[in-house]
Length: 130
Image (cartoon, rainbow, N blue to C red; front, top):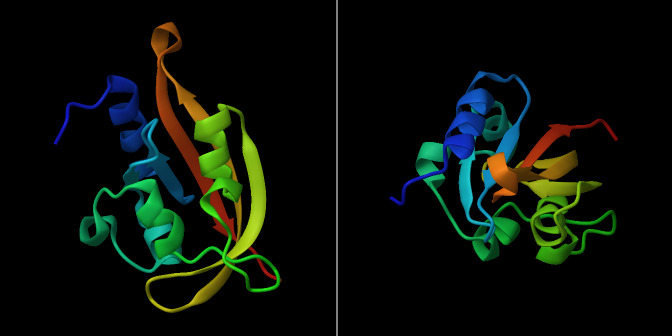
């Protein structure tokens, strides 16, 4: 495992104490961590999925638009946040690894460290009633 930047380590530590779902990726989009509340929505513990590339996680949780069409990775808020380095928000459906379909809202933002070091992105999300 590669050495992580201190800000990423601290973001992961903070996320582990929060009651809201948090998803953290590096600048390439590699999933670094999601917390326990995220596990409840995604349908599997992080210790079971581990780190994975954007091509995998952006399809694994089956993001779908209102019509049930698969959303391409470049339309997902977290991918927008890391590619364009701007905050992004969207609502869409996912099917968790527990086979449950959920409507979620996602707010994502780039993670910028000390001295303007670009470190990746963070998404917070929650399940919403439809």
